[in-house]
Image 1: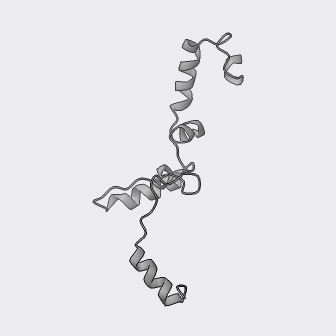
Image 2: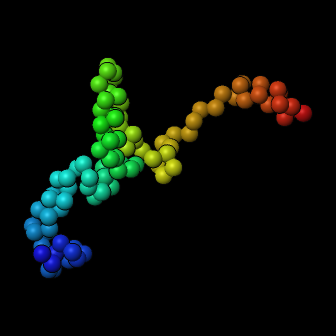
Length: 100
């Protein structure tokens, strides 16, 4: 029991003992913050969130990713830079009088 409340020390708690404990923690996917952190969830959904999302998907032919599984835009970095249309940018600069 002491191993559950302390940091992992492989000298006291071998990996063959620690792994089943970790699997037991990760079984509860609905409310486990440990599972949410490992799954890179943006936030921990409540039962009402899961129910509303399931109801919104029931009439739709396309399935979307749940909002809690989407990457957090504030912490995740974009993979590529957005493409800028230089012609439109020049037209906007002319309209605003920035090219003078």
